[in-house]
Length: 429
Figure 1: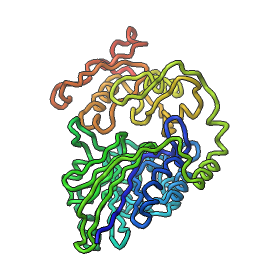
Figure 2: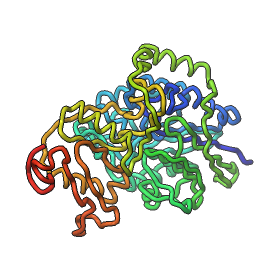
Figure 3: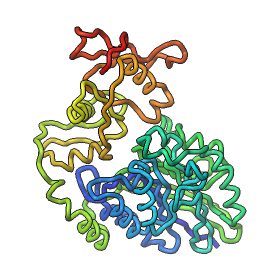
Figure 4: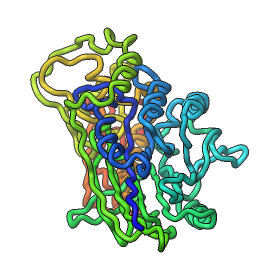
């Protein structure tokens, strides 16, 4: 006999449970989930690849409650789960009514998993055991504020896979899913590259591999594995459909697709009511008009944009400093023409990060920019948004360690005549 198993995967809500210009909202997303689950209620899994607890206005617990109501079956920790420290993280995990996974992040002092997490879980559907392994991007320590991540350390994802995938098989898992908050990049020919692909090459075979962390929908079967990435801001949902032979006890056919959320769908009434109740205390504040936009401002991660310049200028103004920089990946989305509300700004800044103020020299600024554009780091975390200085780059040059520099000049234009190019001196800024 053959039976159908539907595995749904998504990631990166980033706290956006309310419908807005950039997100269809949790209620509309629930309709996408139910479009599959209603057809196969006993054979459907809903898996979450992380970056969900990010503080918006309403904090992490309303997001946790929404994920519970949605019927989440398991979740992997993303890097942004760690943004607000250990107490915040553990409180959110404790509120989850489903397994929270991470096989390669542990407590530094004890070597034990993050409190409340397990490396993997084995779930049953229609008499089939499905092992789900959680993997968090190894780049997490470089994307989380240092003090917030200090209690933790990241270990090798490939070593975790080589340890736990055979263990899950030994415990009876007939299907194995890697649920990874890790990026991969889609090449022109449809192939993929990046961290998740490298992990897949180094671990035993798995049936489904679900990624996250960056935008870009993907659904392809590669060498017998369904590879999915979808769900950024609830806009889409990855769907792997497996045909399982109960006599042979193996998957005999598979397909995968990306389902797109209908922004106009009301979704489940209980989830709509839940979201309205959660955000009611913040409605007046988030709808406060701040400005009027005359044109579209859209974020770009690798090159300069008006929105990126604006946000970096805001950081410089807020910190009352001469220069400012911030991660491009700490922002995103767009500001559309028309009324700009407080929520419009929150949506493009995303993570409500604190502004840190310090002093460093022009030479240190130059070295920072050189490190940012080291190929592997640039590929994972993109560029910086900057204010108060210019940087001229040569992306065709090799990295500085090969005795050739990508950063040609860094200039502090308001004080250029007074101090000269900052990279040539140790004057503090």
